[in-house]
Image 1 (spheres, helix red, strand yellow):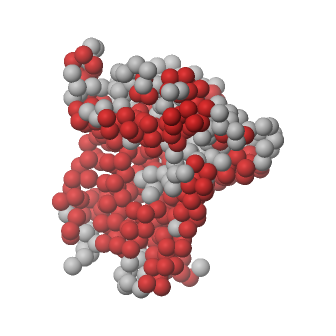
Image 2 (image 1 turned 60 degrees about the vertical axis):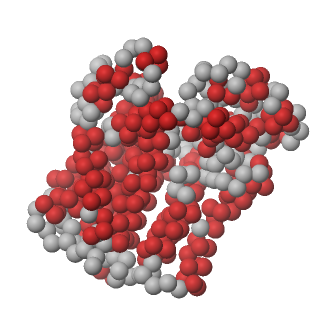
Length: 465
C-alpha cells in the first residue's frame, strides 16, 4: 500500500475520484437501459473450426493457429460465467478496465511530473466513443488498459529499476493478445530500457516471454510454422494485392475464404493438393483451421512478391494513414453492434462530430497513386472528406516529438518508438480497420499530447542528458 501511495497511483483529488465514479456509473447506466457489453460469439474464429459438438474448449484452442490465445480464453471464461446469456464477466471487467486506464494514466503523468487540466482528462476518458470501445471486448480496450499500465511503470522506472520485470510481463501478456505485439521486438525494447546490464536479470526477463514462445512452438508442431499467427500472408494481401486481376490464381480469391474455394481453383498446386485428402479429423473440415490455411497464407505472400506494385502499396499505405487518423466511430462492427444489441435506430446518425460527412468503412478505398483505369469514379478527388481532428493533431505530435527524440528521457523514447512502430504497422497491414486498431495504443498519443501541453504551459520537464 505504501509503495502504491509513493508512486502516485491513488487518486489525489476529488476531481479524479469523481471521474472514476462517473465512468463506473455510466457503464452501469448503459447496462440498465439495455446496452450490455457486446457479444463476440465463437471464441474469435475458433468457432469456425467445425469440431464435433461438445469438443472441449481447450482442444479447440490447441488446434487454433490463427491468433494468439489470450482473448479467446477471456471470452471462454465469460461464457462459463454468464447467467441467462448475460456476459457478467465483461459487464464487471470492462468498466473496471476503463476506470483503471484513467487511474494509471493520471498516475503516470504525476510520476513524470506532468499536469494537464482536469477538463482534458474528462474529455479523453468520458467521451461517448471510448465508452463504446470499453463495452466491446476486443483487443482494443484490453491493450489500451495494458499500455496505460506500461506508462505508469515507466514513470517510476529510474527510481525503481525492478519495474522492468513488470513491463516485460505486460509486454508478454500483450503478445499473447495480439500478433502485432512481437515478443522479440518488445524484448529488445525491454533491454533498451534496462539501466544496468546483468545477464542473470536478462535471463529472468526472457523467461517472462516463454508463454508466447510456447504458443509459437505449438503452432510449429501442428502446422510447421513457428509463429503466433499463420494468417500473416492473408492479412497483407488484403491491402497489397489487388483482387480479381489474374483469373484462376490465388489473387483472384478474396482472402479468408473457406478451404473449398482454394481447392476449387488451386487443386493442381502440389502444396494445396496434398491437403485435399488430409486425414486428421481436426483438419478435414471446411474452416479457417484447416491444414491448407498456412499454405494458402504463404501462397498469398508469394503472389505479393511476384505481383508487387510500388504504386499500389504506396496507395494502400496512404489509405491506411488516412483511416488510422480517422475517428474509430466509423468502425463498422461497432455501429452494427449498437444496432443489433440495443435495437437503436439512428436516422441520419453521424457518429463523429469532427467529420460532417460521416463516411462509412465502404468509403475507405481511395485510389491516389494508381492508373485512372482503377479509379473510374475519381475517388481520389474526394480525399478532402477524410480530414478530421485526429488527422491534424496526431501526425503533428509524431513530427514534433520526432524532432526532439534525442532530447527526451529514455522512457519517453521507448513510448515514442512504440507509437511510430504501430502507426506504420497499422497503416500498412489490415488498413481497413486501422482506425479501430489505433485505440490499442492511443493512450500513448494521450501521453504526448499531455507532454506537449505541459511544455507550452511552462511546466518544467526534466530531460535526459
